Image (cartoon, rainbow, N blue to C red; front, side, top):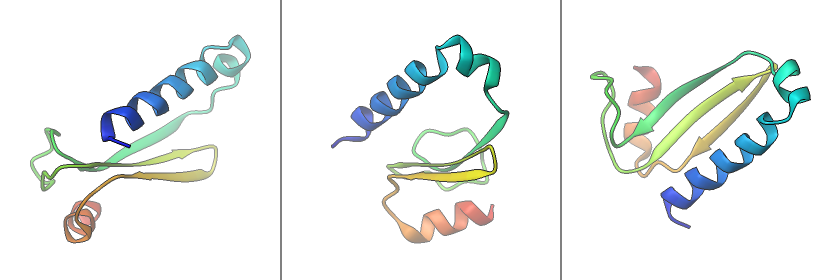
Length: 79
């Protein structure tokens, strides 16, 4: 499945989950760290085709990773 479809699916699911009033009232604060990106503005990151994000919320961590190069991923995580 292409990256665009994955991003659309994740965004759609998050929209459905977060659109309910109960979810909005109970939504914990979180953090999203972009680790791999083809178009990001951060000058310390190496750009390459793919996308990875570390999502941290409610004491849990989820890694969405569609990156293409493990060496670039490692350098960006350290940066």
